Length: 422
Image (cartoon, rainbow, N blue to C red; front, side):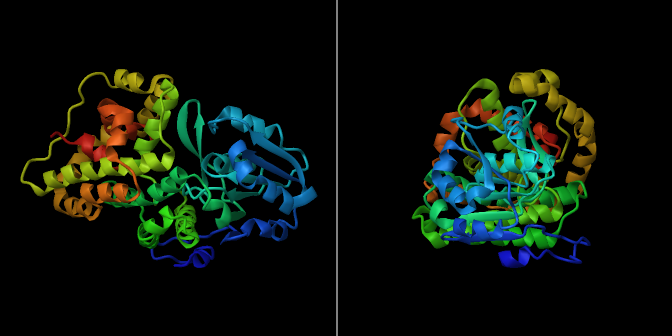
């Protein structure tokens, strides 16, 4: 399906649901910012939010296009802007009584802040993309850090997405590769989604599954042009990122785009913030973490293909103590989440399903790209797996494999890996 078709939504899908898409405008072209004036014609009191870097990239062009309809501009000076309570409060303080539109200029963090604050004030918002770095532009969820926890708050989609390729192709290359990595990570999360359908009878939409795969495949074939900042390749990457966001909106959650590889990425971010340690951008962590989850799938596939009996793992040590060691101040939120979900108490039931449907599960796990294939994709993008290991260390990566799953309310291959005695 073309992006224009996705914007029309799907009625009477084969999954039994209707998938609406309330986004009115998606403009991906050279000079797209110049069209802001016409599409925002009905708005008179606009708040712009950006950070220093994103305003430098596109702010003056946006301000020029909107003219005197802009009543205020909030530019965050933070070197590393965190989407937390402090940032939200700053935006809330600049939303006047007559504000009728918020325009965010940026990528991940600015997009999430514009999405969340506009939603809580019942306002529409536009996002002017400054980097093809993540898949959340068109999604309904806002990724925030609240109470020290990485959470996805329900919000709404933008009314318009402006993706000016003359801006996007000038983004830092690590952000462009982050967007590519976020797309490559879909191989992992789509496999997780299908695994959840087998193990937990979770809802799955084959149309969304197929469309997401299509976006990933088209992007994977464009890597050479992406590295060369070719406008057509950057547009392909951007369209894939936006399409995946729309597909998330179709199903009402991030299942088509986020699985075990994202949980590891969120873990590295949360632990990094907690300990004051360096962590990579979201998309780069997703890309590298896809290599970790590929290895896990291979190990599990070998087990399920063997004649070895599948037995439940026994938890060693004090669970609460381990979570507190890893997550520090965020630990209580993690513990309360898992207490509410009861995932650990369902282990025996899951293990019985693993045993009963082992051949089917093995075939599914083998459908995901192998460790060697993901490794080659990293090399093609100029990334070295050894740099990932050097940054985080074996212990932190191992802790992530065992406990990043506890951050979320979602079943993935990480649960299967820790469920089974090896």
